[in-house]
Amino acid sequence: MPTASSSSLGIVLSGGGTRSAYAVGALRALAEIHHVRAPKVLVAMSGGAAAGLFYLAGRFKEMYDWARLFDDSRFISWKRLGRGPVMDINFLVDHILSVQAPTLQREIVGISTRYFIAATKFPEKSLHWFDDEPLFEQLRATKTFPGISGSVVQIHGSYYADGCLVTSIKDCVEKAFSEGSDRVIVIDNTSYDAIPAAARIVMQMASHRAPRCVRTAVREFCIQNSNPTTPMNSTDRVYICRPKDLPTKYGLERSFMRNYASIQQGYADAAKLPL
View 1 (cartoon, rainbow, N blue to C red):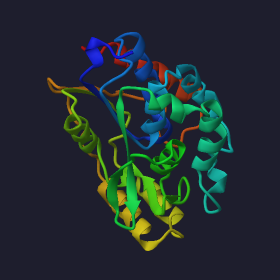
View 2: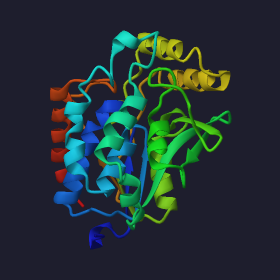
View 3: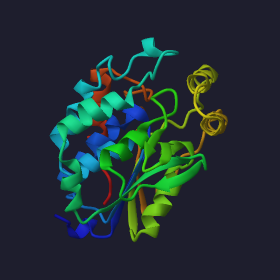
């Protein structure tokens, strides 16, 4: 049920692969400690998208089980590098998320929250906010970083991939305000460190079979993240929940212990938010 504290509140969730374990705990704290269960607007991309939609459905038990389910070589395995996706988003969607919550789309339909999932649309390389596309296909698209986690996803004749290729946390916050929020909570588990040169090479090599427009988007992403970037700061209308040092160090982390510790850290940090 919407509460007084959440009637005009927006929530923004960053990407970050399995670093989004942090968002799982943070969202539970928002619901249990701050009684924010139905914000006015929820904006998410990439790793944070599934956490956001499961949160709206109240499926915290399933989300907490992700730390165990993600520790599976069928989902993440560096042995597939050069032969297939290191992080298999199709396995995630088809054998974890849709198995845990097969009725998720119906559950979300009845809520008051307006939600917006960001993706990159090709060949335009433009930001796209999903609307009436099938829910699990939205998740498949926004989580697919070309090459590393699969191929671009076709929905209704158009092609999509990870929203992080063309959008930022700032864009998502602006979207939340434009859709009627007067305050925004940002759960940001992004690493603002520079992507190491070796990792940038791997990312571009992994996408070598993709169409040129996709390869270009990956290359531009790598260039933009070749140096440390500056995170947003809190203001009187924007509340930032961000870890100082997350146990899940990188977005392809499979370790149950590290990912579960990140969930716990997210809960602790969000519990302290001055809402």
